[in-house]
Length: 295
Image 1 (cartoon, helix red, strand yellow):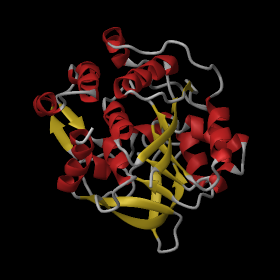
Image 2 (cartoon, one colour; image 1 turned 30 degrees about the vertical axis):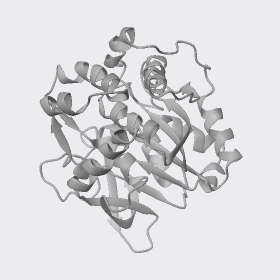
Image 3 (cartoon, one colour; image 1 turned 45 degrees about the vertical axis):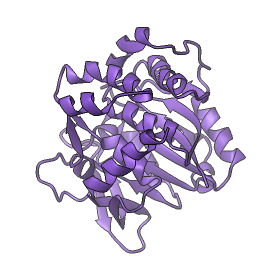
Image 4 (cartoon, one colour; image 1 turned 120 degrees about the horizontal axis):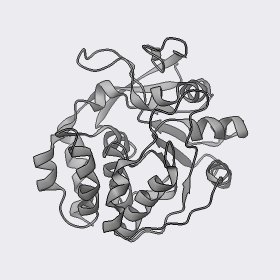
């Protein structure tokens, strides 16, 4: 049985969003109902998403969303990967100012059936929850690549980019009463990486060639792909890739500039937030690449 998914993404900055979207588009277990984009150059991000959809032969509704965070200064104004758009067929026209309403109507059309999958700053989702306070109760679950929770790995930050870019939106979403809110944080996703040379060897054929072209802007600045968003995507269909613990995000830091957006999570058997605490990298890579072998 397929999983109904709505994707909210800041595709166009870190290459991992495109890697995750490619996985969703070719996964036969995924019924992708729509895509919304967030942060600076939201329309260019929508174009990137449309290029991947066309490469996959999929006609998915795409809506550019909020470009500015709720209260803070924009930290992600550009979508560097957009320079690759000249190489790929893509849409150029999208509905303007309708992203939140699209999410709202779609969730109301399928109450209790939709997984809201967020792999960008949470601005669109906070606006959605504030626009229609019933929406959190109408979701099957929300799964987010967001936050840092356990502090078990000293080589990663105590804050995470998606949470930091719009910390007030992060606070709104994590304070919302959702039946299941699953988070895959940076301290776990940072354990799943691939050098750029290996990416160039493995990302061949079909939609992965498009992703690889997008990735060149990313690899100009670093030599590593970290599978932040793809790991969260794989957990939508494979519960055994990560180990999760229940707890509650008690607070999100909004005052200190040093750790603004930090998520304060405490374990509790009856907590309303599921947090990834470990990952089996071998199982992840097997699950991720398996969908491309059969499509």
